[in-house]
Amino acid sequence: MKNKVVIITGASSGIGLACAWEFASKGASVVLAARSIGLTGKTADEMRAEGLEAFALKTDVSVENDCKKLVETAINKYSRIDVLINNAGISMRALFSEVDLQVLRQLMDVNFWGTVYCTKYALPYLIESKGSVAGISSIAGFHGLPGRTGYSASKFAMQGFLESLRIENLKNDLHVLIAAPGFTSSNIRKTALAADGTAQGESPRAEDKMMPAGKVAKHIYRAIVKRKRSLILTPKGKTTVLLKKIAPGLLDRMIYKHLAEEPDSPFKK
Image 1 (cartoon, rainbow, N blue to C red):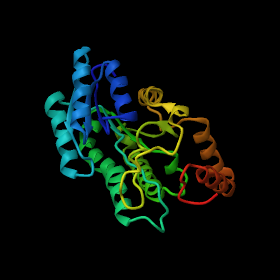
Image 2 (cartoon, rainbow, N blue to C red):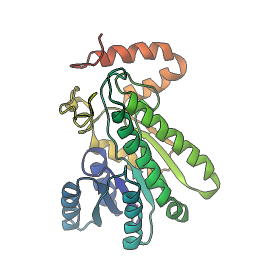
Image 3 (spheres, rainbow, N blue to C red):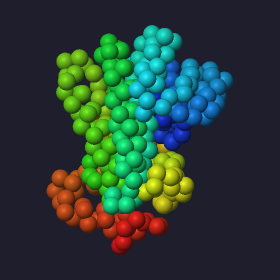
């Protein structure tokens, strides 16, 4: 990644922030994109103070023009793009029967359309550099999760889009990675949307027992360097994907029981 240019969306916290530090520490020039320019701007300043190359740009990936501007700014500054990490995402926690449909629209706008917009405008430069497009998906993109209908739908859509993109560009040497980190310690559950669209505010899970974002970032870095097709982390994640293939009915019941045990679960055990 020495002297490569890497765009990372959702870079203000969690996996995105950890990826920014990981790639920058390996010699890449990183472009930190997020709605919170205060946080990403501070990170970019800290990186430059350590002799790393980085800059931040306020970006709402649900806005097409913001994504176009992000790519244009990166090109104007560095003249190339080698890696695009589509990490920006939001979650939800509510029964479909009770959720405001605007919540699902919002998740699709950020998680799916944000990936589509950024990839659309970066694609010519990524093909030119024979670079990488990465989508930070979820186990929810392999098997639907109860209480997360919008989240699962957006991740299934992201994965279908990226798989199609990979095949379309087989002869262009474009690398496409779909990464499913599993439960990772981050603030995505704290900002998850409730049925009425308000932020959940508190994680229903034990964050300290999850894989740290920094460790996830190291796995993502290696997967991009090795140009892997997919990355599935954590034993639970790997077991979920396996059971999806051999015993989907059993997996349904296991997931229901597991998520029903969360504090204030929207459905009953």
